[in-house]
Image (cartoon, rainbow, N blue to C red; front, top):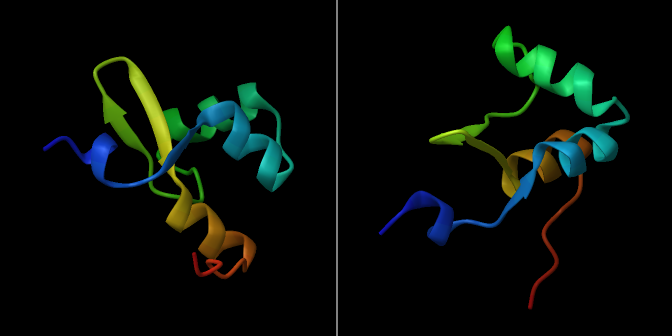
Length: 64
């Protein structure tokens, strides 16, 4: 099973907006391995796991 199928992710533009930076800045940080959240590369696609993004923002997961 692919990791993208097992955990919720968002695209880089959405993650950048959530942390208050531009999309281009986000990609520059990713290229420099300085993005504040772990990213997943799947071929040319780059996504950000929502768990790491929530932790960075101090957002607790809401129970279903």
